[in-house]
Length: 249
Image (cartoon, rainbow, N blue to C red; front, side, top):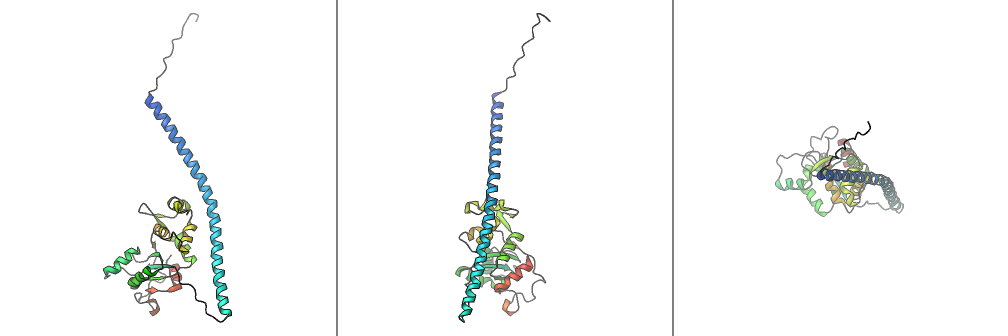
């Protein structure tokens, strides 16, 4: 209608605290989005790098095998006997419980993290660990694992320690988050470090939770507390450790 005026609407005043909260929420959301995008980008880079490293490790392992064959043939061609280098890596499995154990033996088993029957751990072989193995020999069996054994243990039975919790190795992200500072981003990095007893062996081995294995196929021998060379299970079984571990995975 002519001459009619529309009343002016009052503007709604938004409290300053709500405006600040809104701006903060938007900033946090943007930062979270950027962090997620950066993580996805890094994950893609790590995947490509993991493939390259895995291929490099395969070539290294094959070269090792070829070198062993070549040295054996050279020794045989001149009538000599080829003696392989002493192993640097052992896999140790506990075969006896806690009853009637001397405190010294119990302490060494704890140092090796062998707290239960059928627990297994990787051990770097040196003078100190060799002496410790002599102390606990009636309670464990051990030997040098081959690449297949190391790989299957980690892939099939591998758990890691994160914040004192036992976490399964479900993907490479677990490795990258915990061992990225050591330039390790995938499971193959862990396998390589363990198998070759690399410079970061101690840190990586401590990162791995002791392996929980099954009873071997057919269970333990009745005379398992005798030495392996006497028909029992205890002590050094050399390369036969691989056959045992395969039956326990």
